[in-house]
Amino acid sequence: MSADIVDLREFYHSPLGLVAEQSITVALSSLWARLPEERLVGLGYAVPYLDRFRADTERTFAFMPAGQGAVNWPAGERSSTALVFDEELPLPDSSVDRVLMVHSLEFAENPRESLKEIWRVLAPGGRLVIVVPNRRGVWARMEHTPFGSGRPYSRGQLTSLLREANFTPGASSEALFFPPSRIRTLLKLRHVFDRIGRRFWPVFSGVLVIEAQKRLYQGLPVAARASRRVFVPVLAPQGVPTTRNR
Image (tube, rainbow, N blue to C red; front, side, top):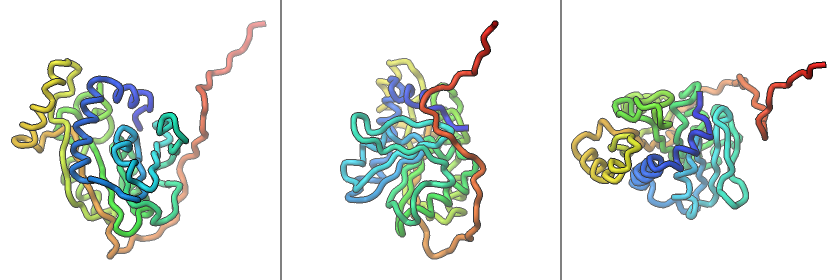
């Protein structure tokens, strides 16, 4: 089950969420410096990180799973948000250059099918970056952050999953070496924790950040798939109808 859009937005507006965003942004920047004139799709809840790249891109979209919900992005501009089913993305084949998955793969109902769908929409040579909770890290064990929900992964599990979906895993990084505490004193020390953690205990990071490239020399079997769900957009909460006493 996906995380709720309200909980995700509130987390990233909290002091803990802001420093988590900064730590993950550093890891992403080490893999993707600039994306000049490329087409980027963020899948899941990637909006805190899309602003880092969209100034250079040809266009950037924020695709949010229907089970999670969606918010308008970017704020104050024409919306680039779409509510989607991650196994049936509303894009033609080979139509985007990059995909950034954040708060996505760990909530996917069928991770292999989701990755195969991303393979379909990526252009030849297209690249994917996945940010997932590290099953060895303490963040995956704390439920007061979005990284404590869903299915955490080890590096080996993620690498195997990518290869099965016809991706070639490449560069990787880590983030969130500081404890997921709301105590401001500890949050101020997060640079110290990150510096020491990257050097001495990288296997215990809070999240794994892995890049993969679409592999072209091996075909994928083609099979017709029927959508298992139909989502109806809801613009406002719908209460349970009540009957009046007569």
